[in-house]
Amino acid sequence: MSPPTARGTVVPALRAVRAVVFDTDGVLTDSARVHAAAWKETFDAFLAALPPDAADPAARRPFGTADDYPRYVDGRSRRDGAAAFLASRGLPAGPTLVERVAADKERRFTARLRGRPVDAYPGTVRLLRALRDDGVPMAAASASRHAREVLAGARLLDLFDALVDGVEAARLGLPGKPDPALFLEAARRLGAPPGRCAVVEDALAGVEAGRRGGFGLVVGVDRAGRPGGADALRRHGADLVVRDLSELLAPREGQRS
Image (tube, rainbow, N blue to C red; front, side, top):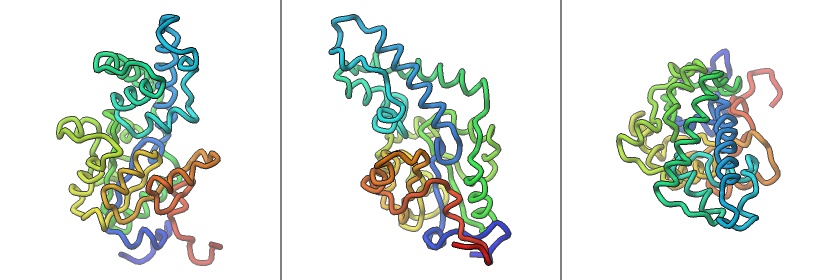
């Protein structure tokens, strides 16, 4: 790589890879929060509308953004997330119902996104610029069809050499996470073998996809810092876990480590 830049070099673990694939929601931008809110509105409305005899009372408890979201929908496509959550409550998850729930979530998320662009995390911007200065190819990957719009609104799109989003995944017939197909396609577009490529992901399904895909480095992002969150990411395949991507920048000369 090139000599250290004014923004500081990356940590040794990243220096060993040839390219980096970043998940989008919750890693690059604060869009995971918007997805979680849209899912909660969708599922809570669905559960409240169930007939009295349609499900056990315990199955009607509100959708939890702290537990249900990371366990069943984070990092997955809308249809896969809807199906997984419905099944977790013992509710029918046939194609028609799943499609209806997924469409409702899409409508609610789009309304929120149109109301206010999603911000990029400052630490993420610093890392992306340092990698760009060092000539490291980068790709963004997301199961969301809105990834391009989200990245453009956050002024990050031009920093990436490739983007594999939900639109591309549907066109190519790529299965969702924890299958590694999305990340493998991103690495292919960067011209880097998975074993020489890093994946940066905050969802359990995503870090598992990185492990299954044989990526050389899987970085888990635990922004919330919930009890057991970092351990869960490691169990699913993260080689290292950070709270913010600025932790992947090495200290500048003269700074404390």
